[in-house]
Structure formats: C-alpha cells, structure tokens
Length: 143
Image (cartoon, rainbow, N blue to C red):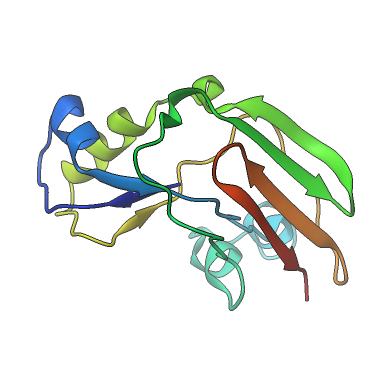
C-alpha cells in the first residue's frame, strides 16, 4: 500500500508517482460471506470496513523502489501468497492517477493497492502475516 505525500487531483501517472511519500504493509481484510454469500451485500462497506479490518505497518518506508518487491502473506505460518508487486494488474502510479481523477488525494492518505494472487478464508484465532521485502512484516490476530 502507498502513502500519499502531497495533494493531487486529476494527476497523470508521472504526477502520481511524484506524490508517493512511501510504502508500507497493509492487510485489506474482507469478509467474503458478506460480499458473496449469506447477505450478498450490494456495497462492500461492511465486508471491508469493520473494526480491525485494515491494519497497516510496521513502518512507512521512503525512497524504496516499490515496483518489484516480494510480497508474502502467511496464514498461521503457511505461505498463501508469494508474488512480486510487479504482478499487480495496475501499478501504483496508475492506481493513484485513476483515483485522483475522482477525489483529491491529500498528504497522509493511504491507498490499499490490492495484492497479486488469491486469498483464503480467515477464521477467529488465525494469525495473518503480510511481509514485503525492505519494509517488514505486519502481523495481526483475527478476532
């Protein structure tokens, strides 16, 4: 995920790249049953916006080439995602540029960029670790 460092609106990809302050790890938790199963919410706010659903850290790293970092997610110690940020469908500047066409981005805004690969169902008591080379590891307990 990226942290915005300056205000931008309708930015080109080059302007978007220049607006990136740094990068960090984030766990964009989703309750898939609320999205696709029981309830079939039309909006994803509940499935993505509950308490504890968007942890981030352990640090914001600046000056790192975020375009090809190894990202790993472990669920209870087992690797469930292991791909490079270069495998994202859209790179960070493209994502930021598109978003800035709809909303003004401000310093400190955080954008979860998604992850390459697939995810797995989480259960209470699981431990999720999101590790990105050069940034560190974010560890959280599913409640």
